[in-house]
Image 1 (spheres, rainbow, N blue to C red):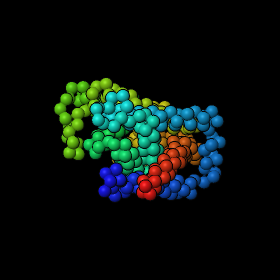
Image 2 (cartoon, rainbow, N blue to C red):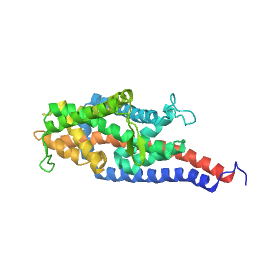
Image 3 (tube, rainbow, N blue to C red):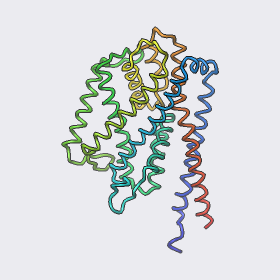
Image 4 (cartoon, rainbow, N blue to C red):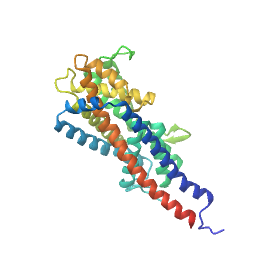
Amino acid sequence: MNKNEPTLVGRLKKIAGPVFGLILFSVAASFLYKKTQEITWDEFAAGVANIPLAYHLLACVLVALNYFVLTGNDVLAVQFVGAGSSGAEEGRPRLSYRKVGLVSFLAYAFSNNIGAVAAGIPIRVRFYSGWGLGTAQIVALLAFTSLSFWVGVCMVGGVVLSIAEIPMPPKIDLPVSSRILGFTLLAAIALYAALCTWWRRPLPLAGLKLLPPGPALMRKQIVVASMDLILVATTLYVLLPSGISASYLQVVGVYLLALAAAMLTQVPGGLGVLEAILLTLLASSDEAVILGALLIFRIYYYVVPLLVASVVLATVEVRSTRAARKLLSG
């Protein structure tokens, strides 16, 4: 057998990628179809009409900027595992920003709608393994990107919740006040910063022994993760009607609580939780107007990126399928 001839396993790996992409694309298409069936034209029209055009445009800019900032999480994670384009170790793959940005956008666009376990993690595993990263590197990368989210929640949430009191719905009963929760989050981020600064012993993770990020990488992680959450919460605030009784900090706090609940329960986008908390916070406002604004927010931040990511993924997988056919026929 010719050593250069692809093995059966190699051929199956080439086919597995496009098949996975097709399955994920089908799930996304089904999800989008289901969501459109839940939206009435009157709700959509009311949501659009109550928001000035300039705010619609500002929200779109903020969403685009947010997804760009999100790619920073993967860039830092790739640096953490030693595969950055400028600092990869000898003999290890070097990943350009073009590749890392692509997989980051796809992973976040799908995981925001379908869930990290169902979409975000498989997308990263599929692409990063195809680009030569080993199992240990991918596990470390996934741990870093997951940790980045909670670092951002602790940093932004700690500051916001310790300043602004958030009234909670009766069905969502926290064991402590939101302010105490805020101070707890700040304590957690301080502990993490201390760990990254002074702890130099490997930590066990899924059978691996990983060092915490160094102080410089940790600071970048905090900045990127915080910017991400601030941008998306600002997008929500921009789309809410003028004259609402809640302050900017309260809206940010509400969004962070809903997002944290979504991550813990794997409810995509905190669907239902965000609405419940926000309606309690804005009890004096027109409920229909608030729900209309939330609908527009979800379309801009969740649905539109998912549509774009689905087209991008389909394009990538079509090209991969063509390459796989050439391999099988060769």
